[in-house]
Amino acid sequence: MSEIKFYKHEQIPMEMHKVKIVQQLHLLPADERLAKMKEAGFNTFQLHNGDIFMDMLTDSGVNAMSDNMQAAMMRADDAYAGSETFYRMQEKLEEIFGMKYCLPAHQGRACENILATRFVTPGKCVIMNYHFTTAKAHITRLGGHVEELVKDEGLISKSDLPFKGNIDLKKVEECIKKETPENIAFMRIESGTNLIGGQPISYENMKEVTDLAKKHGIVTVLDASLLQDNLYFIKVREESMKDKSIREITRMIADLFDIIYFSARKFGFARGGAILVRDEEMFHSMEDLVPMFEGFLTYGGMSVKEMEAMTVGFDESMEMDVISQGPQFIDYCVKALDEYGVPVITPGGGLGAHLDAMEICKHIPQEEYPAGALVCALYLCGGIRGMERGTLSEEREPDGSERFASMELVRLAFPRRVFTLSQTEYVIDRVKWLYDHRDLIGGLRFTHEPKTLRFFTGKLEATSDWPERLVKAYKEEFGEEG
Image (cartoon, rainbow, N blue to C red; front, side, top):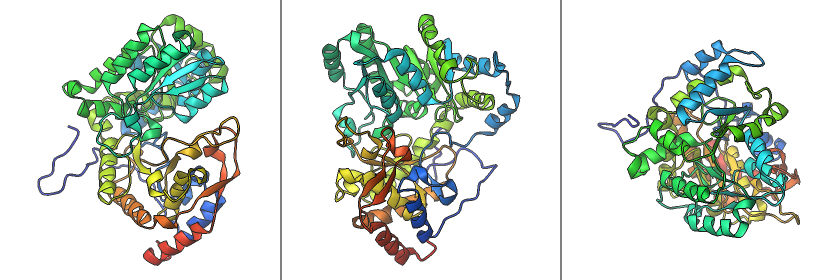
């Protein structure tokens, strides 16, 4: 069962768990939030967590563990080499995905580093449905380039299309012809396209594109970090999959790919990652990179306690009652905002609700980072920390000009089993207020701009006194302590 039906109440998502441990939250007064935002250089990554009321920056590594996951941590084998914990994890991954070989790494971007180091050389092309920031950065730093071939419909913010992460097969064929198969390092499919609203890809589309890759001898790679959300959407939205179990769908997907990697900070609800490989020779071609960058082959830079927890988490991720919670809460939030008239990516995807900053802040030019400004404004007006997913998350062109993002989004992530429905209602309320006062939001400019992954550590400032004027309007509505 993935949804509880109500008799005399509107249909709402219901938590399929009970709370055993709580962490107290504090809502700073609006003037203090303004001071903290300035100290952070108008970058939500630079805020201290103690200054945040609701942390919706990410669902990476901040999901609540189950009681069984925490109990499993006590049996961890901390041997440097030959840890039994690793073999338990490897056995569980082989059971689920049917892939014999496992290369552990401390998180998903470490897996991306290993894959890029193994496959990418100057001039090589990597085909994707859509890029993720760190995946692209590892490829481009080695002289490779990325071709994003998501269907055009995936970039339409408001629609009812069920699989906006689908790759365009015609574009793929044209790209293979242009680049030649020999120059394509690998084809990477992201299950749940992070930067365009956590939108899923269908099983049918994955099968068609991997069949095409196999025809040309191109290595296929699945980024399964957001697989649990994508499994839910395949199960409920893809007609041919409705009678399949989550485990069956997972194995069907796995059978399509040569390599699968993931961040267990998302898939598995713990902190780690791994690369799964089908072919022994391909496994041996990468195994020396794990000790070089991560640690020995039976811990890979991970805490063994986390490995034990994620092994249980993999099993839990095969349960519909577990993986349905995130998408259902996100869908509830998205529908409520849409009914209020707030521009938001529809239909609701995985990861979180995504505000369309290009539409909300259409008065702010892209070179002044509308999504970055909107995410800062949301912290000022509610203590809610989201994440900018737009031009600020891109890197500049070689000539120093801005590479404008296809979409300007603010992601409000829903860490799994963390927030209640009343907290979700608070977020909806504050977003609606901010939308109604959107004309008060202004732009941002860099004061410190790192060359790579600038959105993590860069510092900015407001282009005017708009933050002060926004906070003044907020206090008039909600009072000094609002």
